[in-house]
Amino acid sequence: MLSENTIKVIKSTVPVLEVHGEAITRHFYKTMFTAHPELLNIFNHANQKQGRQQAALANMVYTAALHIDNLASILPAVRQVAHKHRSLGIVPEQYAIVGTYLLQAIKDVLGDAATDEIITAWGEAYQVIADAFIGIEQDMYATAEQQTGGWEGFRSFKVAKRVQESDIITSFYLYPEDGLPISSHEPGQYISIKIHPEGHPFTQIRQYSLSDAPDKPYYRISVKREQGSMDRPDGVISTYLHEHITEGSVVELSAPAGDFTLHAEDPRPIVLLSGGVGITPMISMLNTLAQKSDKRPITFIHANVDSANHAFREHVNLLADNNDNVRAYYCYTQPSSSDRDISCYHKEGYMDADWLRQIVDNLDATFYMCGSVPFMQSVYAALDEIGVSPDQIHYEFFGPKAQLIPS
Ligand code: HEM
Image 1 (cartoon, protein in one colour):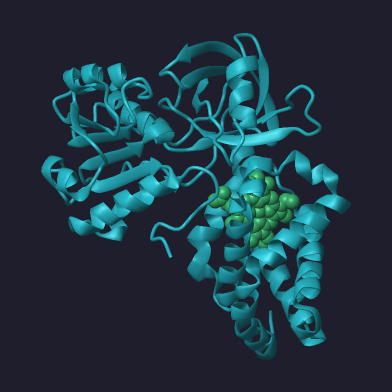
Image 2 (cartoon, rainbow, N blue to C red):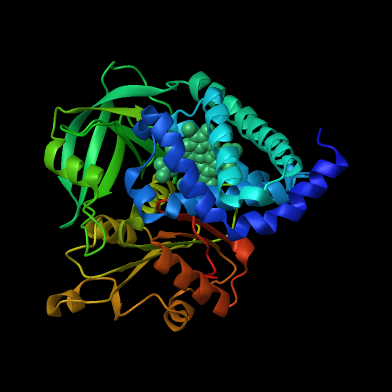
């Protein structure tokens, strides 16, 4: 239990730390990785380079600190991160390491401004925040292990089949090497895959949404080959999966995780909105609904560059043809001339408010969306414009969480 004074000190220093937030977390990661290089086996190096992870961790610590006297009010955010930590295999002992280097970084960056009182208060607050995460994660580990077919940590899976879904997306069908059952998953959840690329000094872990309905003897992931750009290298793991993981290869997976899931009990019509490879959890949701012969109106809306990049098009068209309640709409930003004749192709350009107003005939629906940060920000704004309220929208960003409304 924190004292009144500690809470006061924490709340009054949050704004100061926010100003130095990224400097502190950058310094923290640098010193922590120097002392504990083994942690480079679990952190995503690409996120580190882009600074997205630094921002995510810093924001979370400050948000938690602001609510230190009522952590329950930010429980959904804590649970979302805890899902990711559970999927990565984070253990309680690692919280002590993070705490030590975070506190040291606050001291180093703030210098004389970091009085003993401030450092002691932040040490106590960090422990409260860490304990909240650890408690939730321990429950999640126990649940994952106790589920039929469940397991703790990483388990070996063999790639039984690879399917090219578009020019840049390939599906991998993963069967457990031990031949035993695998746990069910909620449509929308992801798995972590652990790989040690040849010649690379560390293992790498990435999360990929499961792209098929649950309760099959396999898990399926559908991976986009991440092409680099001027300021960004190719995705190490996605390239490795495409180039080196063939039928017969073995990879390590942790059990399904994540709280971006289909709310089956919610009776409203469903609208599934995706951009690019954000289509993968939507396919899992759509397949699940179709498998259950769910008769609610389902509107599947997908944005892409063109048909060559567009995965699962034939599959979704087939479901729309065979189920009266399923309608599909696609928009491409750079359609080729033949793309204009594609069934369900509707428009050149982005998923904007005018178009959504035309094609979503029931705004009292539940909306699920997934895609890149710009896609999510612009579709969220478009939904707001047409009168959809935030509590009707469920979403997941690819990569570390970002802000839906740009600051
Ligand atoms: C991811 C917060 C402790 C390892 C994250 C994310 C947040 C976060 C906000 C991003 C989630 C997302 O992707 O949306 C925190 C807080 C902690 C804490 C507030 C302490 C109270 C730890 C510890 C470890 C750890 C102890 C292990 C040493 C990771 C890793 C990721 C992650 C590996 C995945 C992101 C990546 O690899 O880029 N954490 N974390 N975290 N966290 Fe933590």
